[in-house]
Length: 238
Image 1 (cartoon, one colour):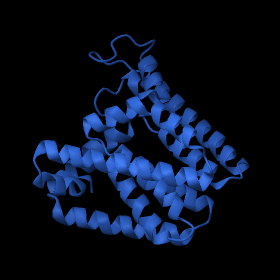
Image 2: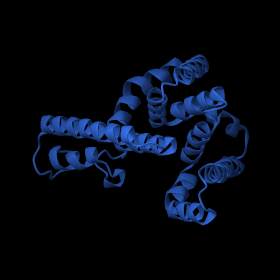
Image 3: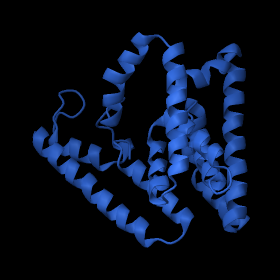
């Protein structure tokens, strides 16, 4: 679906395409920040401080032409629309999940709230978008993505799988326990099976901690934020 998303920008000169793409991200973040601050009665100064703290990640996002600004905007707008416009929420969250995968954790929030109607809509919309992508994109590209790229993505192995920049427990344990002649020649010990065991146990512990945290929290937005945070920590990208 990511390829379909970028198709309109291929009709523009590269510089203009990047400018338009980044302006969409900036507009999305500005609008959603404004709406969330009004909904939760957050002072404008606090919103400004939050955006300042995200300055370097946002700069990286815009420099690399990433979709994170748009994905976050879609997730937050989806939350705001959930009560009164469930179809809009389903469309936004499905699109976000198909663009970056990890936003699919938002579906867990629908399960928590027993909002099966929105969950069903999100699944149907995801299926429709995927079907369109299958129909329009070369099957060989899909085969490579599903059999080679996606498994490596779930393992945090895109680019350097030992990079500390991912800031995840998966990478930390991999640095300690998995040897790689080029990228990690001097681990503490070479014990791949121990790595798999400890990584699985850490993830189970995270699920337990976050599940209890969400159930103990009463505010809907806090629950949603915790679930998104959990989704990030459970990936190899942390």
